[in-house]
Length: 106
Image 1 (cartoon, helix red, strand yellow):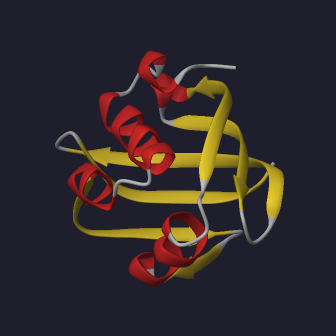
Image 2 (tube, rainbow, N blue to C red):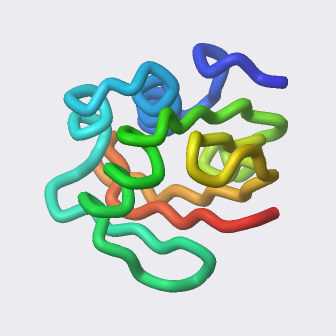
């Protein structure tokens, strides 16, 4: 497992640290204005999805591997709604902030 503080890309590191801390403000700070996301290949409303899948359900990422300069992760993701699952995450970073992320089962 890779500790969040050891992740290569600073924007991705900030994202994972914010998710694991349940810190909405830090999470928003890691995102570029107008950021978007998709889950299992379908575009989702970022605010609704993150509230439901991360913040109100105790979402947590245990990163197994990183690639693509730290912008692609495989993580064991868990929350109170779905339990634990192996997930893949891919991030697009612009000007030091995440402009888009994709997640889905790995």
